[in-house]
Image (tube, rainbow, N blue to C red):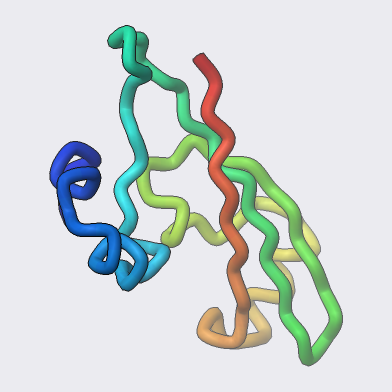
Length: 93
């Protein structure tokens, strides 16, 4: 994966074509202050209609499966591949 600096230097068309899960996130602002990154995750299983909303500080939010009791029971019954993930980034200075 590219660093944030390398990503900024790519031509615009290449940045647009980059898959969303490979876009790097800035580690600091223009003054050098480090960010604390929190990922807001919305996961949905469309066959059962179950939705799960969670927040993680994990370095890789795509691997985070969640920690809710009902959600964990559902994950034991179904395959994780059937879960749709929507990820938003919340950055706190």
